[in-house]
Length: 279
Length: 288
Image (cartoon, rainbow over all chains, first blue to last red; front, top):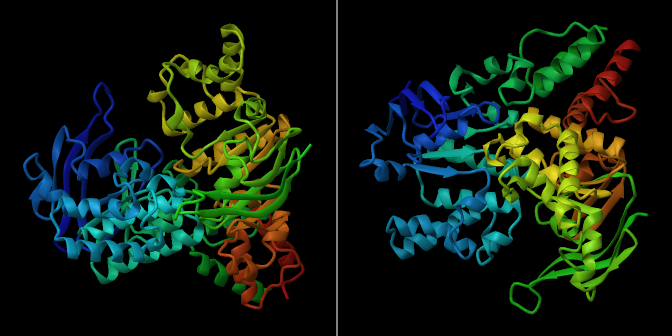
């Protein structure tokens, strides 16, 4: 692995007045430029992990290093400049009176000169397809449009790490494809590290690596194809069963012998074609 | 009787530079007892249409008829109370509206507000908790201590406690994991079949449309471009592509398979079950 941009060692956390740990003894490295998916059912601790990395919560024990610096109350503000977070429900993160101001907020905070700021805001809004809404009130946008604006706010900051916490869940299928395409190009061409916390199997399949969190512990850390082989157990990990696996299960109920290994949808089409040709 | 929109126009922020017409001369019906899905690209007017169903928005012109009540631009707000007992809307992230100390009190809020005695309201709240599958032991807890999926159930129970005939759902499973999503969707399906509730579902999840809805209304830029069965909506992928809509996974897969030229589906499958059944049929006949 390249120099890790995030290095988490023996991290544990419990919410106040809760006996049970939300996360216990997590060890995880994320390489610079990697695309990592984090999956787990609701309440498994995924979002807690994201908040710890961004310093929104303070660990009880263990350490987090971001870009070589250990996260502490004094380094927190510098570390956050490396991280852009997009939450599931963007209502919780809007501050501007209109879309443009909202996207500019983070840049103003970092003291980016005005000319540069205007350029970056415009570019970010174009990249998420929301330039026409620059003067609109964030509160009056649809759920999907809000998620786009929240992402624009993060893109404008040009952080090295983007953490998406279920951040495409409200988009329509096409919007989702556009946004994922955008993230892919930021990841590939600009080298942004992407951590995507998701329940969406297609989104998880784009990752180089998938981490499964269950009841606060890291239970699997592997390539998507390996993780997807878990079949029905994936439901307990907060993902749906991949479509090809569902179809295999249905075919099995008709006593058709299907391959054991995980097949992508394309793989499944090929297999079916072969199967038909042999008949 | 059905819900009917007659030549409805709706304009946001009229007489300002931000004037935006969200619904354009829209005429459509939602059959009573149906499970109707409303689909359309972001900004197509789905949410605007939905807010007309219980008078949260009134048409700028035209009329909306729900439960024998006709709403026009000049309908007085105080006339809308009765309507709101008939139509319950579950908004996106409805758990944001929870506020009471206990789950039971939260669910009992609406019936109390609509004039039930505290005892009656509690009785209703208990029934509704059961209906949405909340375990007895959480009823005295604070709703804020529950998991996301359970909080959503509390919020939904609170709406069902008004005993609506029409339940309107705006992306009701957003943010839930697939297991929670499946459970909630099953619950709505049950309410639909057992309580004969009319369900209006606004969603981007085409698989939910395929699995649950019996009627689909497709909106584009504030206009109705289709009002028909899901089967009809999904039969032409080119049409869907043109209108920026997706296919259910099984249908998409069936088209991919058909592209190879090895298989021809007589009827496009909408679900995995239908897909597997047609494949077995084709294979049984010895392929091509």
